[in-house]
Length: 401
Ligand code: ADP
Image 1: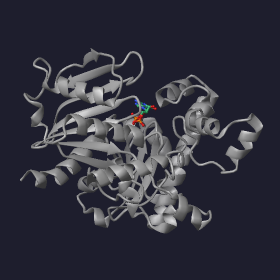
Image 2 (image 1 turned 120 degrees about the vertical axis):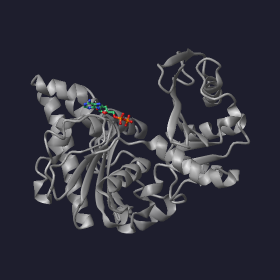
Image 3 (image 1 turned 90 degrees about the horizontal axis):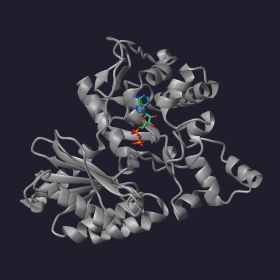
């Protein structure tokens, strides 16, 4: 079974074509600058270099069409006929309370996604465009929606409700939803496999530390709590997002700086985080280098970030009544030994003992705690695309019989 995984952003489209007989990736690629001058598709067949294909890519339908053309291209294609694609899996950011698992896309599902645009105005519209584009070009191929929010739908009310009038939840859907769910699910399952125990026996804290960053408490295989909230702005200090702040700050700054609601939103989402703190960069590679050269604000930004992560780990150990494993994933979590070391430094009271030699690893699955550490620590590269392909296979395979 061949599954195409599609992840649409407002001006980008990432894809991977999987052969699910062995879960191998046949080709992957990225379309950038959709609807903007200078658009390009970088197509990469397995084992080969990137092939840039430039064209005027006005919308997601044209982008999908180009991807399909690239996949069947006589020279750098990987399938002989487009009909070899059996199913398509889409990353969808917001499934609200309606979707606690992946679903087959139907008109009713599309109507629900339209309804959730209000909750995710930046993310759901491009996801919808991607699904519509595929329906238009490959109407006979089943499609599946895999939601970033779905894994966190197991959170109990005490974890997802905010201390504001209950009516705001009932009338407007204001509650914690959480994001990066596909990643938290993937790495927690993988950690259980590496430990050699069943998920239902374990308390795992998963740290997805990329440009966007979130932490989850996964108890007995279920998300019990997670740091992102109503939107991805809450929780950890991130690359450019502020994370947890006093809720009175936006109104105060709006008055002081004469900002509109959209402007304060932009300020907290795009100009804050370690970028805002350091005044230098949102990229931890730049910050680590600058800190080494004595830049105090870069050092401060790293300290604030690692302090927040440590604080969340402590609180999630508390709500789970202990912790068996901590997992680091995503760009920063997978690659920066220094950040992992900073975070774990001071957590020894929980029973964590990081091994500096094992921790010297980049982008590779590895246990980084010392042998016999009560709490085991892992680096596990996330693979949201594979998770989407697996769910798509699970839902679509019975339809093909
Ligand atoms: P996104 O949320 O955009 O998917 P990623 O998971 O790709 O983000 O993570 C990107 C971030 O990972 C970069 O901004 C950078 O801070 C960090 N990163 C990647 N590689 C390294 C590295 N070798 N050392 C330190 N930080 C890294």
